[in-house]
Image (cartoon, rainbow, N blue to C red; front, side, top):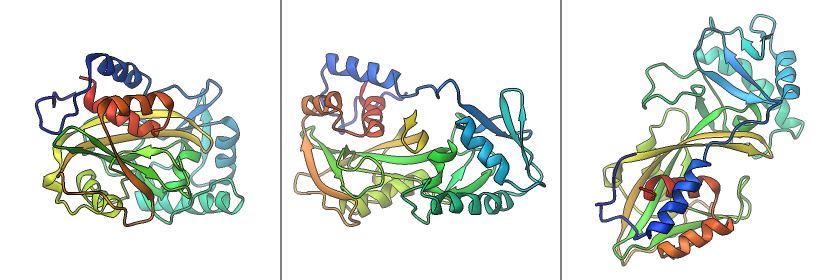
Length: 286
């Protein structure tokens, strides 16, 4: 992790607070339930995702005979290596839509994410995406998504947090970073971050205004929709004293500025989303 403590956009967390953040960060990546299984693309060195046996067997039944999902030991192997990324996307799309129509995938957005599997090597990845799929389906199929987060820091060390709208499909009413959002297929993380700063916080910034390089952290845990695995790219942004974030896209109900001690209390009480808390821990625990 890069040492960014000398930057002006650094809240004054105490050493005990930093110790708490390090402990929190150590729990960012949890293990899937022991009964769950991984599924892989034939010949690809990284798993595609993690699902319950019930879900992965449903997927196996739904896939066409020319691209089957077969159990090999403790893994399920998708025999689709000869298909293009677009063909894999087209194969999975109607399966996800049927699950949506059955009420098993909720929060449909008509927006796709790219899937590269469970890679931890440096961004950008050298290989092309495996496929694209509706973002709301990623947790059901246990796929890893990617997201951009931005800490909004004032010159006196306060941190701006946005409260997620009550109608959000995930984590309604919880506090988040100044801006945070999943990275749509075809968009790079830094441009996504700058776009989210405008759409969510109403602040006009260029990608170059973000203080980087970004800190990265992977968060993984079970959620009601299935398995959440996401690689976060986290920047800082200076917010001038006269600026007050104001939401533009209806996804944030209010913005609040907190001192570092209050941020820690909010994390301890569960008032922040887990991803926002992990982004804070990754950025300020050093």
